[in-house]
Image (tube, rainbow, N blue to C red; front, side, top):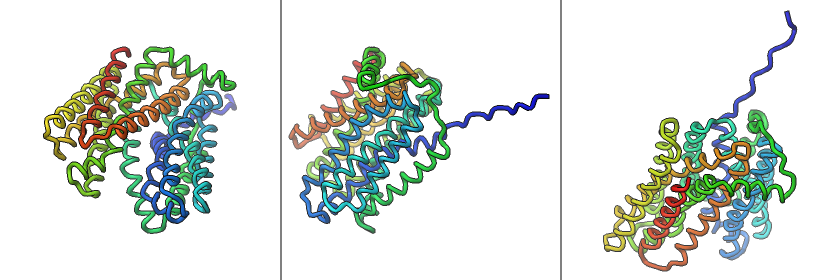
Length: 393
């Protein structure tokens, strides 16, 4: 009889924990928005200077994602995620006693550079522990959860700011990140079983180039980026369009935007149900058709002079459901190209998504028109670009 003990079964990564960690990547962006004016007044700075705490957060969130993926491919997901969450927490703790706007801006940049690790590595870890089809289902659920962040975080931030002041917003978020960080350290196993050598910036760039040379990767990258952030074009001008053009109150604007966000959630739920039965490309194409129909309908309604709250929101709902179908399937498709480089793929997708989102927002902002035409045309353009990309997938 052998004295040898059986090896312990490897721990499984908790999917709910991965979802929670990934969601924290953008929480700090949205939760601070309601407290921005209060922070500016308290620190004695201008609104323009205070806005840097949002703008530079987005810049850090986009650029930082290019680094974490290759590092996690090389050194493992777990240690890189722990370092990122530690940096995130340090930035939050620095922001609480910030004596001036310069310190707060530095703290926000630290937050963004740490938080983007959660976005990249959360997606990569989901892919690590899932097969090709199951990855699409889990990424759809992840997308659904992340879609709720811009809807819920500002409401939470507003309540905390109203009750305890703007500094408490960072205190609440710091407590959340500390708890999640502790759970990661204590319970989350390493999921990257095939580490690759990526020494230096040159090799990191080479890893991205290898992915970009693959036509399927490029197709899903463009389609996913268009779907994932094109609705920023509506959210950026929603208050002006709904209040100035359609006479809605500021409270009603929040409800209208929430309806559109829940359209994305509905699409993501549907995508998760279809993932194990319908090929990724077919579901993504079906979602893209809904995007085309929704955007074209909105453009036609506005050009015909029949724009109302209902005729605005219903086409946007159709578009949002399409986005919920395209997004997670596109992410699953591009990360299936080379599972050993899923970290780099996640990084490149996150950077491209944020860049496209900024472009869509700027396009609508620069197109001065007292109508829904800029939004509708931007959404239609994004859907057409995604359609061309998916034909090449």
